[in-house]
Amino acid sequence: MKIRLFKNIWLSLLSVFIVSSVVYGALGWWEGVENAENWEALTHTIWNSLVDGVVKKTGSISETITGVKTFSDAPIVPSPTASWEVASKGYVDSNSSSITSYDSGEQVISANGTLTLPHGLWQSPDMIMIYVRCKVAEYGWSVWDEVLYSEKHSTSGTDSRWFSLSFDSTNIRIKFANYSNVLPLVHKTGSNGVDINNNNWRIIVKAHAF
Image 1 (cartoon, rainbow, N blue to C red):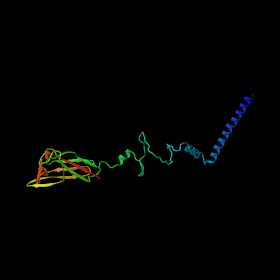
Image 2: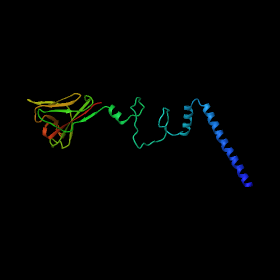
Image 3: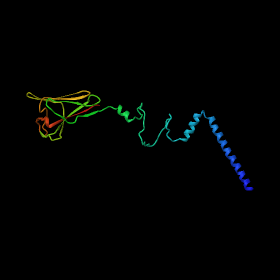
């Protein structure tokens, strides 16, 4: 009998405690509602307390992220409007200057021949360099020797050995004189001038746009 009475008293006290806790919590919550300017502000406060230190998925609130963050997939970003904003690869590719250098590779030297070389630069070249590369050894020069060349004009009697160079925003053009040994050089180990054989050399054009 005493045990049952004690049990009933304990249950009553427990019920009072639970009810009091609920009422007290409700009153405290309602007081917070009354003190909040509006429901949105209250919701924002509760949300911030729950996700403090967590990056938000949406919203216009500025956040500072520290430490190294590794993305398993590339993030998608809008096109930048300020110098400090991140840019996507597509934006960089489409807004970068196009090709800024050109190399023609080996070109045949031919009497009275013309080379028209589309350089693909984004503007007319700012600098053009001409090289000749030895393919068959002669006059002391070895195979794969290269000589930095320039537009030259030399005459010997009625012969003319030279080429002209012109260019625009699309092409580089070289016009050779009508001679089988059109390009003069100096002997590699000597001091005398020589007229290299067209078939033994190749011409290379390199250009740059700044």
